[in-house]
Picture 1 (spheres, helix red, strand yellow):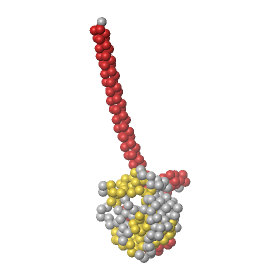
Picture 2: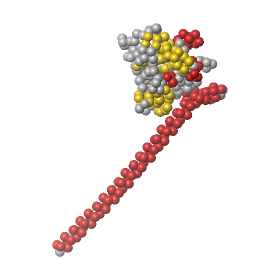
Picture 3: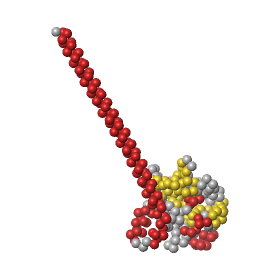
Length: 296
């Protein structure tokens, strides 16, 4: 009798073990399937993200290429067209990252600190505030933080170091002697660089203010000012307006009067001929991407 009971107990234990073993095997199989599905979904999501980034890049390239449609847009008299382009595209001040392929032979220094990515430069710009992107803006707006350092791009003489309408508390203008064939093979032996929306102190109301004055000589890389806060910079939102005019200060005043350090073209559009896209001092744009960093 005891042998029968022992045999039954052993059979029960064996069957229970086999059942548990099968359950464990089934669980492992389900787990492996879930892992595979997770990996498959992750791969698909990564692929979709890459496609989205590519689509965004193509959109930005297409929008920037609208600059070359200037004649068509200018001639369009429909108010709806003008309203759409000026209010939904060109005045859109979202910070984006511009990747610049630099000319290694360029002697000029970028006015703000740039991030180097391999051989290229990356810097934040305001979309819609690129050079003549709105058929009006005679410079580029570089997104920055209050107090960021602004440096002279080349050796020269300071021709303006005081407030100006639209520029807030301070706009600096430096005259440079540099002979070069610029756009449309225009030969200019001198030009001026314009730095708008800056101030003399890194920290507001600090006693350590810059003491530059008109007529002072300044060297490439010396500090010309600091990014001003949006309450005092004359335009709102911390940024640097950076412009290049292919004339001396005196020639600019002779041809343009009191607007010689202007940041915008006039209604006739006849001032564009005197201005250069500042990026052409250094190289060329090769890519625009959304700025992933909250810089406010």
